[in-house]
Amino acid sequence: MKPTRIRHVLTELLTDRWPVFLWGPPGVGKSSVVRSVAAEKGLELIDIRASLLDPTDLRGLPTVAGGRAVWVPPSFLPSDPVSLGVLFFDELNAAPPLVQASLYQLTLDRRVGEYRLPDGWRIVAAGNRAEDSSIVFRMPSALANRFIHLDFEADWEDWRKWALEAKLHPLVLSFLALRPSLLLDLKGAVKAFPTPRSWEMLSDVLKRFGPEGLVDVAKGVVGEGPALEFDGFVKRTLSEEKILRLLANPGEAALPTDLGELYTLVTYLSSWAHREGMPKAAGTLLGRLNPELAVLLARDMLQASPAFARQPGYRAFVAEHRNLLL
Image (cartoon, rainbow, N blue to C red; front, top):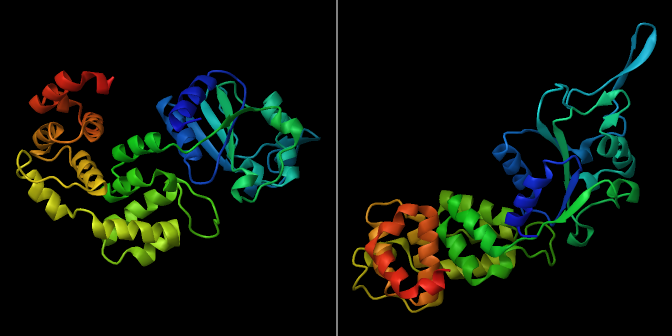
């Protein structure tokens, strides 16, 4: 499923009592989606790394009360009977089999020994797949049968919308617009390899160091092959100075003909949507770009600033190409 679909389905499933398991490759945002959905619903989130647990951790420790042995549950499990939240077991299938077995009773019966999970809490788990070269243990069928399983897929369009909102560096977005297959590529993954998470990391590195001489660092973020491709793209495409000169006269300045440079222009405009004069420049360019890129620019500008809909250039574009925006 695409991340947006996962988000919608998970939001609905949290109204029921059945545990949910998210499967997907590393770095695609499984944990982020769980945290985001919990925050949107106003739910407390307890993030437990299952791979760090011992088999006895969930049961707790015994103590003597009234001449009897009583199990004291661990402090990381919720205890307030009226609280609401999500108990999130991340990397569950990276935990050894005995640890996974310790979750049987909690996931199905919502209890461990004397401990009972409060009614307002839901259980969500996540894990990587064996085919993604991750260190995982086979999940016992008895545990797997206790979950609703959702397959998490990396999707370029979904991620692009998120990346614009998160203000990732425009050069990362414009490069991946040309090479969307590099958003996630686990072939030959050893140390560094491209994932949505590593491109976000590269964006932060790019903002700090700038594009000049970045390739040696980029190799340690997205891998050597993608880093070299990205470096070549950065050297060929429009610089910020050229983009600013073009946007100073958007109605008459010569537009680039290279597709990569056009993607760079559109992405920078969307990233600068709140700068003075940029909405007007974008409205003017809508009438000069080919329809495909114009639609991309229009949608990105609206996502960044809904007030863009009031621009005369946007209204004229809609009047002529309404069918393309449906």
